[in-house]
Image (cartoon, rainbow, N blue to C red):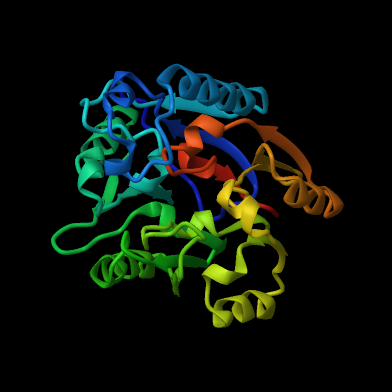
Length: 293
């Protein structure tokens, strides 16, 4: 049934109201060689599904409406990281152009889900363009940072810049040096994320000094995440509302810093999910988020 949802997202902060997720199904169990997928081990589907369900329950407990993508083909085992496949903006979606061969085809499922929800597709990255939306972070309502790595190329950024210019949104390109375990495929959200309009979490070794200076010039303070916690997906947070943030469990320094900054921190265990390469933020594609007044 078509719902006629009109997305409204211009920040990674503010109150989260509606999201799209994909519960890991049988396709997740088809991976037999984790090295071929760049995974850190072979997570069990039932354990990943349990972690995913706990995230959905937490979101719903905070009043977030959760929509799900249905069954998918057996080769699309990473579609649970649905945020990588596109992003919402005022009234519609921009669909990514997935670079990794094992993720190509996820775009169709996001498009079909959008059609079912009555959401217009404004643009799909195409041709030689490569863009995975895990490389995109909103700095404010008029600025996005986009990571440049193996998962997002110059043509993808050109197409994205053209779309965003329609909304008078500035795109700041950020070369990513990578995580401490990087193959050059790192997403920006794995090394940087906003938690309040004036506060971010960052793994500074992965981004240029110029980007850190830009953040400081904009009055954005940064909590520096240590190496071990970056590997444990500490920057891949989900802002639920102005005071509440979801954080992967096992990051005590980042949790303490967020708490000291006045945030309520809810820890979620994603030990099995993280073996597949992503973090909490990647599991949720925001469709509606109210903005700070």
